[in-house]
Image: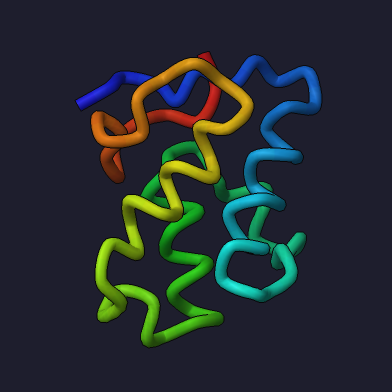
Length: 86
């Protein structure tokens, strides 16, 4: 497990989160953003919008890959407890 996805809070987190939701064909639920601290927080928001997401093969890995696009972390090491920001 990685402690953090490695996003810096300089706008890269917005791009990464947009990429993650776009990967599933949905818009970012901005109203949820104040509650997002960990990857699991964002994943929960996505699963609320796309209830079948957890049932899709490799869905969480695809989600983490999109989140990690703005950092140099290995998405396979990201888990739901990983913080978004450094």
